[in-house]
Image 1 (tube, helix red, strand yellow):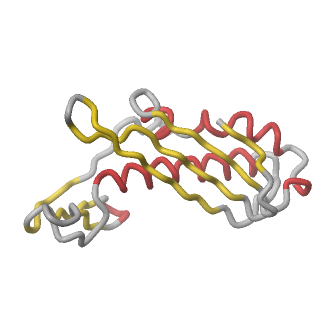
Image 2: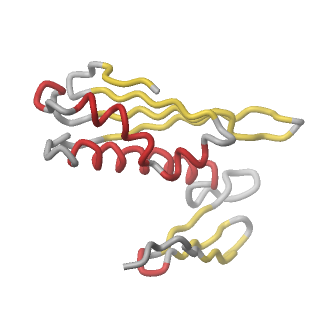
Length: 149
C-alpha cells in the first residue's frame, strides 16, 4: 500500500466570515471569526490551529504509550494560545499544550521511553514549530509532571 502524501479540505463562504469546512468522508465543520468581524458561530482559524496541535500531540502520546502495550487511560488536552503583535499584525506567538494521562505513571513501565519520543510522531506540532513556539507538559492522573518539552 502506497503512503498517502496529499490531502484536501474544501472551504465555502456561507455568510460574513462564516465558512463551511468540508473534510469529505470525515464531515463538515463551521468556522467563524468572533465579533465584531463575524458572529462567533464556530471556532476561528487560530483556535482550529491550536486544536490541531493539541489533538495531534494527544494522539501521538497515545500511540507512543500503546506501542508498549500499556494503557494511558483517558487522555485529556488543554491548549492556550498567545497572540502577539509582529510587525504591527496579530500573530500566534506561542501555544502551550498540557496533556493529562488518565492513568498513574507507575502503571506504565515504559512511559519514560514513550515520553522521550512521542512529540516526534506529531506531524502538526513539528510543522507548526518551524514558525511558532510550542511547549508541552504531560502529567499523570495524580497531576505529577512527567514531561516538559
